[in-house]
Length: 384
Image (cartoon, rainbow, N blue to C red; front, side, top):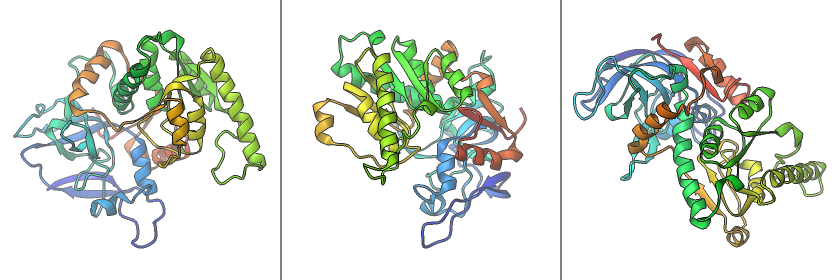
């Protein structure tokens, strides 16, 4: 058995939907690796939205869904190989690798279940040692010119690469002659949106993104993306149950009109060619109105709500394409890594907010409340 120091999430009580869970420090024992598995130690991890979903037990209690007595979260980060797999592909002992959190894949190599989240029997990087599939270890480039703190944030970038690839091709399917410099790509704030708009900007598109604090607005501007201050549009996220004549509804309509006017100006009246909306929830109706005719609404996350409502007739008449992706294709991982190494399409080290292993509960609280001081919160497990 493998012994490890870990932050553990246990199942909620049976019966009625349980409230939020909490991470508890514990010494755990994990099964010895199978022939196709490697024993690794986590060096640095990145806090991901699915970790917050797991703690909130929303949309599900993953421990109960997996039928496991506990779960160790942590899907994205850098590990060092302690004992390579003896069958199949595996980096060698001592190699530093990106951990690719593929639990179960479909026949095309896309993730169906995520290691350390909803894949039964798997445990992630919030532990000093853990067991992972050997073919989910992607070695870092030898003598990389980028620091580990940048690579640790790759979890926002790999899904962004995949989502942008699909969204752009869908847009091109209806806009074969269009010039990117004449079209606006807009994103609601978040690390994946920042990465995705970075790709769009590299390809010559106009880009704009929202944030609601000065530090993040500055980061957006420093990436060459037009920052839009959400605080200038109070009432934008109107609760669905608000009546049409309530003051909250009127405030929402005023805010939405003002935002759409700003986007209209930035796009020279065309509207948004692509809207990157990984929030959903109460902002989704505004997303639909912001998208141009022949526009694309694309998402690879659902932070503010899973369920969306659309008027199918209106979407057909405006020829909107809706793109939904999850994670990325396993076989594209090395290509994305090499693109990052060669282009520097990575978060700069100063963009990461770092926490020590002892401070993981505080990191969880900061992320859940929106107080994490960065798009890329990372944590140390073992010293390098």
